[in-house]
Length: 417
Image (cartoon, rainbow, N blue to C red; front, side, top):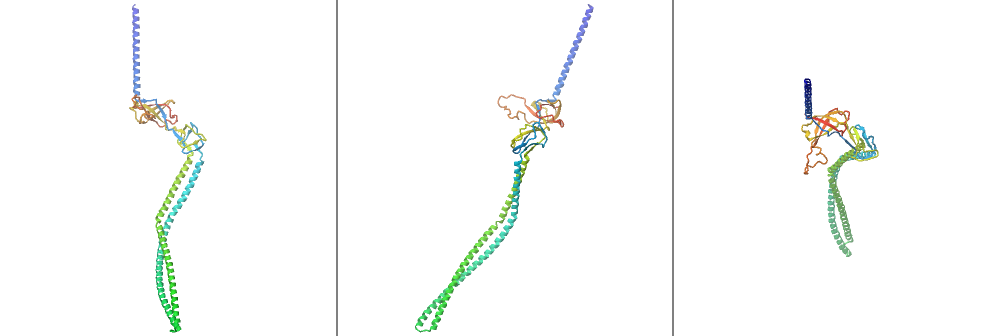
């Protein structure tokens, strides 16, 4: 019995020791779990993470600046091209003709401008010479008018003298004729000699001849007056013509200005034609479409033989350089987030991590910037945690192998402490 008691005591002692050991082990496990949870919680307070993130990049939409018929398309979808590589060629014939026409129009405009520019000094000299000649002709016409008027006055004076001489001759002839009649009666009565009668008859004939001569002088004087009046009229007409020429010549400065304006218009036309030629040459260059950047071809919709219109989207180029991360964090995660904080990015497609930093934080939530933003003033408002886009830039050298492509899913982790 004593032995059994001892055995039972030993068994109870061993059982108590195991129970104590289990309790200690359980306590240690609980302490370890609590410590791990605390450490995890503490670390989680230092990072903000989201799975609503993707790789972003530029997408260059390629379109033609001119219309035409595609004769060469040397690229395909998913093909990598370098900046300057030919993407498409249009039929250039129409544009080559346009260039030749623009060059011909420019040559014609230059010729017209040179002619107009030469006309300016010629017009200036001509107007000065014409004005001087017109003034000289005006002086000559005035002198001729004065001389004609003087001749008219002299002719009128001679007419008056001739008319007075006619009256004297008529008086003398009347007296001689009357004396002849009286001498005729006396001769018939033999009261005077025949010689006296003949003398009286001769005096009467002389008076008659003198009268006829004086009348002829009156007619001549009248003809001279008519000629002088015509000369005066002609001289006045020349004076009036000279005055008109002087007035026309005095518009010389205005004519010079008009010629200068024509020259300026011709110069402007030359510049216009130069611009038209430059545009035609540009359009000819635009028939060859080259890649603006290096990247991968996507969304190609163009084939040889297609007609192309300006602005028509033909393909897209996605550059593999300069990609970034767009992460949509909850608004509650932005409390301690700042520009410049370091970021670790895990990419779903690759078993590696990238590093970067916060570059910018959007000015509005994604919902607010959507095509149809939510209307909260309807009375059925339900509070939803909003997400704010955050742009993360990769550190230099992180994407040298160009494995990151726009649209890839990533998980960024921002260190906020």
